[in-house]
Length: 317
Image 1 (cartoon, rainbow, N blue to C red):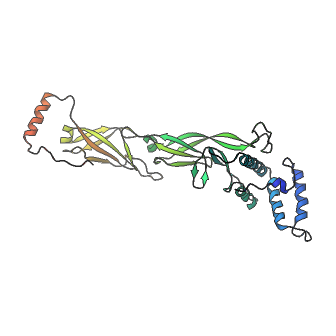
Image 2: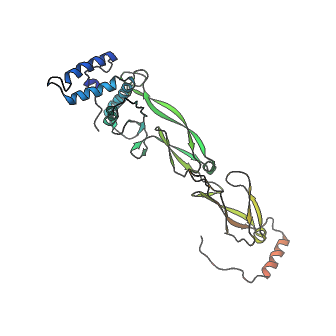
Image 3: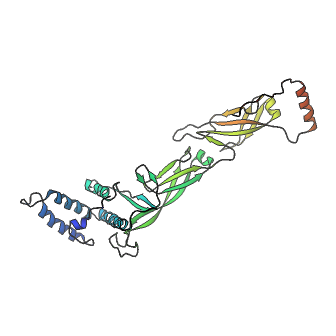
C-alpha cells in the first residue's frame, strides 16, 4: 500500500513551519506552477500544491495529518505484524472541505481514516477492536446496559504528532486515550449479536444458559412439575416466570406427562417490535411426597379398574 503524500515536501518547508511560512511557500509555488504562468505552468503540480496547502493551512487538519503521517512512518519501519487492530477516528467535515481531504485518507490507509493499534476484529471492510459481554436471559427480556472503556488514538498534546523525540508519545505522534461509553443492549438481542459502539469498537453479546428456561427464538421452553392427582383432576399451579411476579397456569384434567402448555406473551420480546414470544411448559408428572400408605391403597383401586397398563414404546421426541 502506497504511503501518504508528504505535503511538507510538496510545499518545500520544514514540518515545524509556522502558518506564515506555509502561506508564503504556497503563494510562491502557486505563482510558479499556475497553469497560466506563461507556458511554465504545470497543472498537476499546481493541484498538488493546492491540496497540500488546504490541509496544512487548516490547524485541525494539520494535526490529524501529522498524526497519521508519523504513525504511517512508524508502521512502515516496524512492518505489519500480528497483534494489530484498527481503530477508526471520526472525521468532521465542514462545508468548505474539499474532496482532496477525503482522498488524503485513502492515500494513507485506503479506507478513509483508519489507523492501527493492538488486537484485531473485522466487520465488513472495517476493522475495530472487539469486546465481549455476557448477559442473562433476564437481561434479554428487559434490556440492559454495560459500561465499556476503549482506547482511542488521539494527537499527542505535546508535539501534535510532529516530533520523533517527544517523550510523551515516544515519537509515535499520538497517545492512547481511554474513552468510556454506556452501551444499551436492546431487549430481545440474539445470542452472538454484535453491537457497534459508535465508530470506536464492537461489542459481541453472549447469552448465558438459564437454569429454568431454554431460549428458542423469541419463545422460552421449560418443564413444569405437576403432582399426579392434580394432573388427573385438573387445577391451577402458580409459578414464577422469567421476569415479573408469579402467574398461574391452568392444568387441564387428565393431563399426561409431556403435554405442552402454551402461555401467550410470556416469552422474549422480538427485537425492534412491540411483540413477545410465548412460554412453552412441558408437563412432568410427580408423585406427592411423602407417599402415604393410604395413597398406595387409592392407586391400587385405580389400577383394578384399568385394563390398559401401557407397554408401548415410542421414539424419544
